[in-house]
Length: 460
Image (cartoon, rainbow, N blue to C red; front, top):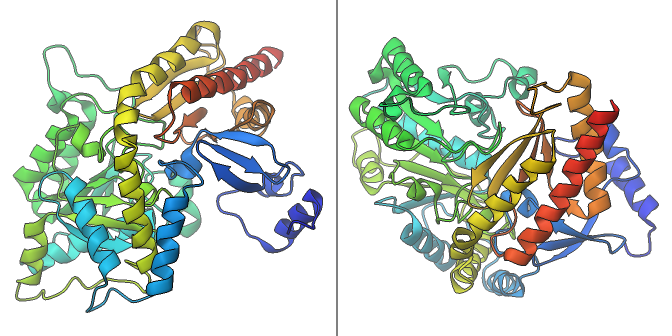
């Protein structure tokens, strides 16, 4: 397309391409970003302008853009064996990828099932939980519990788990037997209490009591919930979820599509919180976005119990592309590169630098109400005025997300995500290879964006 002008390229996109989660007016805009190539922590548009990738693509590119080693490994695999299904047979690439991931997962989560995306990973875990309980003589365990405002994907089962009402509205009725309990936004452990006293945990117990613990198949939760803005749980929260599941024979599923592969400064986020779940879902950074790959890690005894059950014999689920040779080769090369570069350790070593830099912005920006997050995963939340507690009007919030912040990011040279799911926010998730110099540049870009927010609100 090098012979075409930027205007012609955008016209062609508008003519033929249907975008994901994108408003029509944004797609029709002459400022529509067209990303041409990437290198390290930076991406370049079709005019050659450089942007700092403040979202790792979409929580994916943990190892950075332009890694020729991952490309070479993928090409070599494609030349040797471009495709073979993972049904009743295996190939070396998928075997090695499963072994490498199993070495990184906490506890005995040593059985790896591959899919192609985060939504498919969650769908797979949902189906595994249902079939596992049925295989063990408990067919009535059909209820799934997830958290309010959590995003778990867009396939119909995963969408039912997603706790964002307007995502589901166009597709109702979605899968029944799904309940939601509060997330941890704004929660703190009461003085003299424990995580068991958190309102969200109390509500979870009441839901289980209402439907019956023997009717619940699984509880799904992200280690740090993305939607509603990088919600870091209070100390002991995950231990409480583990305890509740153990008391009731419920499977605990950690959705680590975002948190997995180093985002929180540990290979898997539940490892940071000291809990071994029964299933971990993953995707995105498993290949650093270099190829589509998702999946789940399952505790060994659960798979064996399903296989050995009278009604079992197999996990009755699969797909044409799950465990694709090229995608798993990319995962192997990605994991090797992350280990060689100590990408996860880099995020853990520099997370305080990122946090302190972002929190320092609170002093000079009256519209910035809160900075939340951990590792290399943060959300900045906005109000009309922090001092008085004045919230944004609906019109102000829409203008910030749709116009003000995107324009300020273009001016500054930053690409990341303004978010309006439950509040008006800016989400940050830089590549794990970002050093302090890159983080300082990121904070400078964010300062520019928040200044634009201040000025817009003051003028309105």
